[in-house]
Image 1 (cartoon, rainbow, N blue to C red):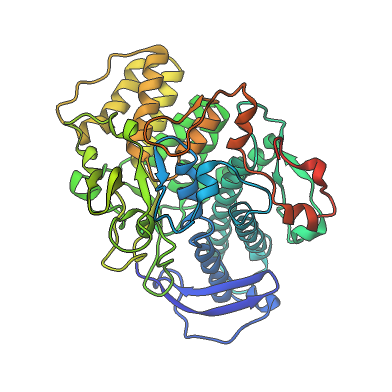
Image 2: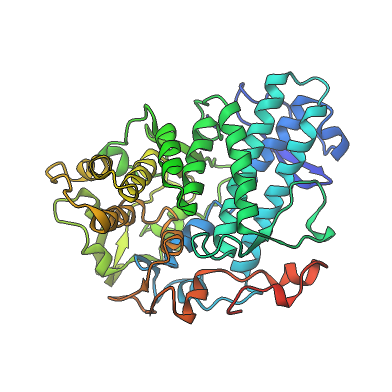
Length: 470
């Protein structure tokens, strides 16, 4: 349902945006700023705080742009063009980041701002005097998924891979209402992942399915559990939660696929919803991808394009136009609704869950089940494709390739390389190339540094707590 932004609510836990999101959530006339104490004096204002947290998730420096863009250009399939790039994301693509860069600093603080606000909702909702038990459960459950979503994304960005060392230093683990300046040491990956797991298990068991996929529900919590356990190599758990997340959903049609990934469809599990009032305009996926309007500076690597067979309908996402770029493939996967930025970002969908299922079944040696799940994805884009007969590592490799082909541009490739400790190889028409393995010193480039601003402000941290390589 279409959201209508109202006005800013200023609270002690920073700025929350008051948003009306349908009769199911809130009907309220614009109001003046209220204090932190008053936020949890009623269900209406507490729910407004939850809407404000969702609005933060859509910010360009976190889920609305930075996260998906950076996760793909720190891979081998997608790049920022070498010319007419407006100087956006260049050091990210070049993998020459430093702790004081905005691409390091902004996602960190945006993520922890969201975590802090989710903490406030989780820890204070029980005291709302006019809220029913069901309303409290809904507030807390959605805030738990928001917190888990932000924690998982930050852990993937600023920590080494779980598969490499679960006890490696990760992010700050703050579930209270103290701000980060109170001083928090880096928790271990296992501690952070345990907190994420706890939040998502609680939310999955308590939240009912929501017809409005602009909000987290039990299905979305199961989808994030599938991602979490995939990182951890917990194949059975990841498979089982992926099945729960995609149960009864129908994969999008080819027509839906070529509609620009700008609106939710039959397989959407969670989508960041934008409207004319609060979209990121030029700082949005369509702005950077679509060849007309906006920045229009994303390109596909020629070797990646060659992985698609001529019969694969997804190959139509890549075009060469001499008047736009005679040398590299432009990408037309992400469109917009006649206004740059006025498009939703589909963050979780059933196709990803099927690919998680296929990967896990292959890892478990259940080859027939893995082949069947993989085939569901492949035959949509190529009805004449034969079902895979591969087994062992060959089948796993086929599934991982299909993840690249199906999910490119949606923010997965960086983490897929890292979580599996794969070689990082850029060839073809990339204008910055690399070739190194997980055993090489250069592998540190796949983990962001801790922001220098955090180290300087946090009395519990020093430069000795910085990630390797920085």
